[in-house]
Length: 225
Ligand SMILES: N[C@@H](CCC(=O)N[C@@H](CS)C(=O)NCC(=O)O)C(=O)O
Image (tube, rainbow, N blue to C red; front, side, top):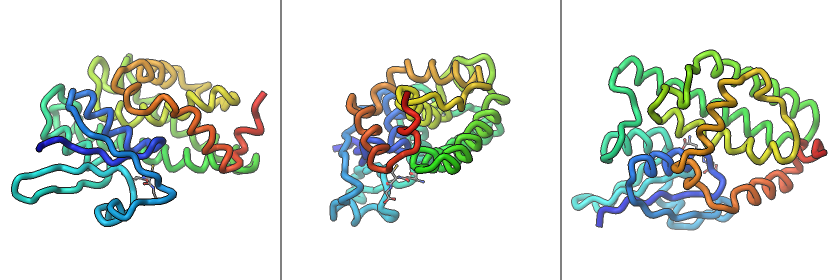
């Protein structure tokens, strides 16, 4: 029994990174989705931080090793699984990619504040902070279609779930976050069309994200036309 199991949540962008990497490498894997509002006992036993994703890796000697932290999981997938390479060969370029993966996590922290903002002032502060972060991304993007050009990389796997939020936000109101970032916009469109990105969430993702916004009384909903 060698199948990897990804312990997931329907909306989690960190889980999606690992799912995208596995899909890119054509690795068959099992996916177990949990309710983070009611974490099962078995999950709490194996998740040191009580967070998803986890990657359960079966091994003949140890029985199983459980990996946590999405970046670590992505690096493990990259190092152990067959299929196309998702990191550059050159160490300096690889380090630069890891840095932009971290930048993606910083965007996610900001994005949480944006989507859960209940009042205009918080919403606007977060909106401007996100626009500034995407301006920094705009400055390093090339001709595309992906972060590093023609080949898909882990940086793409990190940013695709970020952009997915905006596919739902855009159906509610115009945030203007990408107004000054044409390269980011084009990157976003190319990632949205990628089969691995599409396969990383269920069809009910938009409905679930909207329900999340309603549950948080998100200011964004008040901007609906
Ligand atoms: N740094 C972690 C972040 C993972 C994370 O924040 N996961 C969220 C869901 S998107 C979670 O499990 N939250 C549960 C909790 O904090 O109780 C990673 O990259 O894996």
